[in-house]
Image 1 (spheres, rainbow, N blue to C red):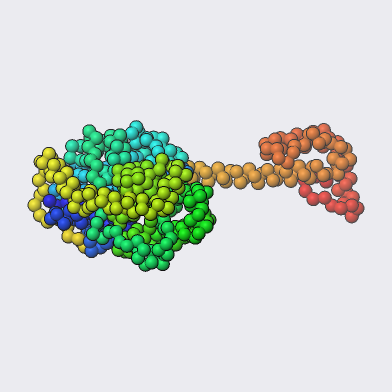
Image 2 (cartoon, rainbow, N blue to C red):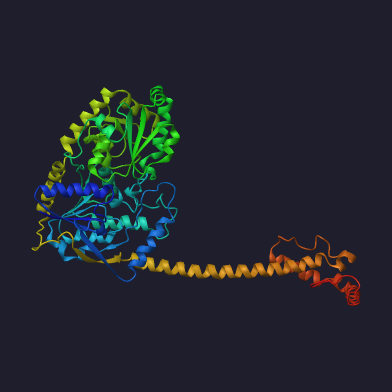
Length: 556
């Protein structure tokens, strides 16, 4: 079969990492797989670059929706959120008709809702490999517990407001465009598959559970003591490993990790390890200095870009801690288990599909950090139990998560869909890696006009706000002039001699300008002003003769 794989990025991040493993497995089974990417520069030799040819207004719309979303994010989540309203119209590239199957991966910021629908109408089987929730929501990649995607995705709790109704619009376009018999989703985890079915984006709940895979010839168990020494760790130390590439992303559970470490310190077993200096927390990726505040020894392994070194790091650990609050099927989980290292985490997302408590790892009730601390201590204080879990973990990976296992499952799905759809690819070659193809880049129909209207309204509002600010400045200047006149009236010689106007007659300095002006006019037109005229003439004459001090301003 000839398979076109679509992804924004060819190499960087967890989703491209999992995608490339599927590509390798399919190629090893004899299929031609071409990878078409927007960010071609990350792997120019191994992918086909898509060159966006912007249509009028598309780039402005694309820029607009970044700030539109970013400025409205709430504190519920800081995971990426994308408005799929602008993208490349890949369906208009003739080359895609030469493929038997289109396999779509992480395409946010690459393909829009309408662009995805056009691919579905093209004819060949379309398989979405789900790496997160974005393909079936109005914009969030992880919903932070919200199930609005099962209804209308509005109002969205991750946005403070959404005057354009982006989330509801995007979800509705996906439902209208993707609920077709030639479109299915492949989810690595049962949890994500169930969520996708509830979204009603895929017709008749056409969502299959096809687990991810990894290179079991590369991620292998090795001697733990030797692995520890290779990283400068004492073989007698108990080592916990935490992957911190995205420690700042709240759903990764970093705060729960620090809480877990506090509970470990309060537990007698953990305190004994700490007092003896035998507990080390090793981190790779972005080291988090906050961990040092928990009274544990840290060992920063830095960024690990080589898979063999990464496999050695897993092998060096006695347990890998995965405190995620939401996750699909983490690469870290599969990689650690393949290396014979048990994983401890919360029973959320795709973890229970693979990690079986007290069999090949440990699971704690969601977000119970004290329970997670006890589970981790069970592993690091009972080496025999940890070793047994590690061996069972390796067996589980070998039994169902090799590259060939995954590729065989996808191959069977592709073949079934081809037969059901009756699709026949057009003759001709695909596009060779290293090359590039052009594709129109546009805002989705209807949404481009709505964006233009909103942009014009914003411009008009800006002009009105500028005019309002000018009016406010003029009013403030007038207020200062009135207050200056009132100050001179309050301190005038005529008022001191005549005792008029009284304090109750003149306004306070914080009174509104219209009230000040009204009272100033009333005072100037009152009888006391006329009565004081001779006195004012006398005072001015005295000033001319050099007697007294000349007053400045409106009143003597």
